[in-house]
Image (cartoon, rainbow, N blue to C red; front, side):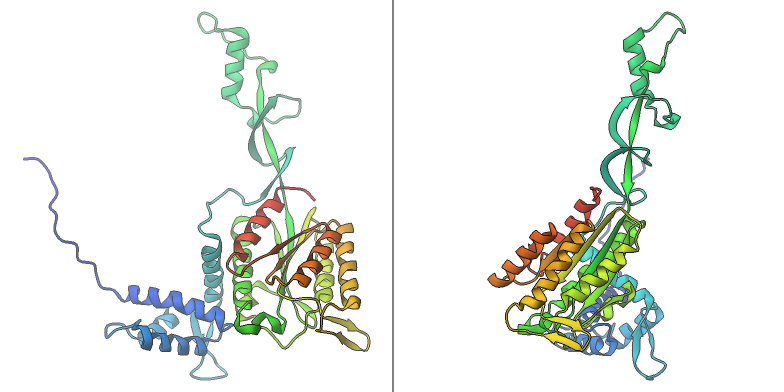
Length: 369
């Protein structure tokens, strides 16, 4: 009697995990939009549930909140009983979700460093071959190619005779890898939420995704994140979900000064600045207070900004500007700024912002600046 299989209808198992997963994806999006406000996110989720029937009698919103607590995504606020905060686990999940959403699934690589066009005493093999030279290590020798050379050069003798000389040896070149220091500047001036368009949430997602990419794939790199409005200050990666726009003007000069100060402290050869902004520079900090002008392009502010672009060029720090606006006079300013720095500029929609930054980050890692 032969062995076989018996088939029957497949009935999917009903589990509360499925309900949690579908609600959790929406909750994570709402947490980003509400800048980490759990109460507001849950309130919005309740409204969506009423409108679209996200829960049922088997799994309700109360079950979801309990699961969030049990799984370690939220905890109770000790100062405000009945309210919740997101946890470090949620912050990491937000970064991973942003990476998946913006960059897609990344193939796993080795140690996660960036290749340069230069070969030599590196730690990862390339496809380039050359003759053996004194000082090459034995593990660099390509045995297949070397044996083939010996057969071609000396033939195959009778019996056990086989000749392999130094001239037959071929080695596989090792690629140098480079560390890169990147400063990501995010504009948090009031214009990032003007005209009914939320520009800060996509900027936050891009920053979280880039941070997670560096952590996972390029752990030897340095990534600093700064925000700029009337002033500029550095923030930690874990603060990104809570980032909010303020009633600020745009002090691009303060942002660039801080970015260059941070990069001067890094001992890497590759350094760069990514700047996400939607507006023109409108503010300077002076000894007596703030100099502000939101009407047109103020030459006093613009000239100081251009001077910093030139300083960055002398320091071999390219600035890539991601402009979330397309006004003709702003284009002209960004073009002048980019020409002075010899950097790059993109006039991007919010939808394509993450892809542009990801591709530029990878491209810049392949060269030694």
